[in-house]
Amino acid sequence: MTVACVKSGDVWTFDDFSPGALLGETSIVIDAERVAAWRDIYGEDGGEGGAGDATGRVPRGLLVAGMMEAYLTAVQPRPPGNVHASQKLRFGRATGRPGDRLDARISCLDKIRRKGRGWVTFLVVLSNAGHEVLSGEIRTVWAR
Amino acid sequence: MGQVKSVGMRNTHHRQAGVPDTLVEMRLETDAAVTRRYAELTTDFNPIHLDEEFARATSFGNPIIHGTLGLNLLVSAIERTFGDALADCRIDVRFIRPVPVGATVVCGGTLSDREQRAYQVFVRTEDGECAVEGTCTVDLT
View 1: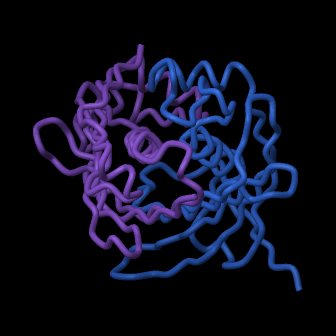
View 2: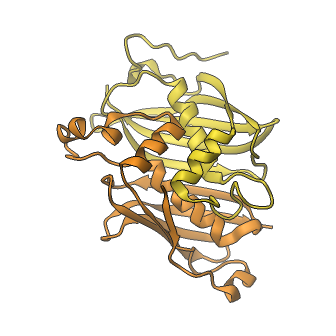
């Protein structure tokens, strides 16, 4: 059975989410602009194993940035006041290189009400040509 | 624009053993331009990160950096520590405290379990306020 999430109003609310439900799929291209932005922020080499090194692999942090973009694209608009409370990251052995197109799958992993707050955890899986490069769990306090 | 510096030297002896006692410490000076660039990178244009007037009206009082802006400095520190030997990596952190735009953040980690290759990791401001804390476990080739 496919579980669905349906936004009921102007913004996504806690009640709209169903654990296990797919929220969206998108793709992230590791283009020159993205690599340049990373270098502007974190420096020219982007870290060992980074965009400028001999292996050609992009820094893993660039994958994290892509994960956030995928989440923000799939779950919007969001109510003001959400809090990004915690984060799990699991990087696979596969990675990305400049020019690669990463497939992103965004789903609701869990939600719970505790002490008057609604906690929602999202799962974002980034894959490159079918190989998982990053699995990220974004745990949030949902404002509405 | 970015002012990233490694502030801890890699320990060659421990590197050869595969599991150093500490991660390379890295430092990043944040400002409005860095935060704006990170917003463009992630498409996260939440005004709490970018709009001083908006932020003044919130409990934070000033714009704050994106949580993953600091977290990604930690990811870079892990890469710099292990280099090409890093095969698999798992990170589990909590965002403890917001970091105001303009602060310098420092990240690093301390080995907590050599057998498991596990580290206690942190991102903090230069004046010692902890922003992110958690664990990291690595697999090496």
